[in-house]
Image (cartoon, rainbow, N blue to C red; front, side, top):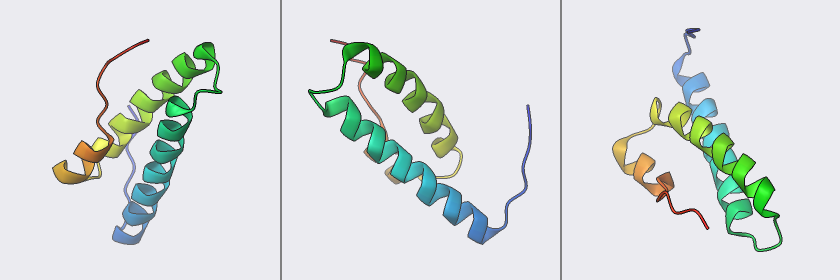
Length: 72
């Protein structure tokens, strides 16, 4: 495990970057034009980024990005 020390401004920036990345992946997961194999990869990446986001965000913010585990 690697640890990082961030100041308040860096935490806010990381929070912003992770939220934007999660938003983009949610958009791609809901896009019908995206191939199912690509969606599997996006879903795996989403789980990793979401776990990172949970370390920074409040419970209310986390609930906005929580996904049901429904696979088509």
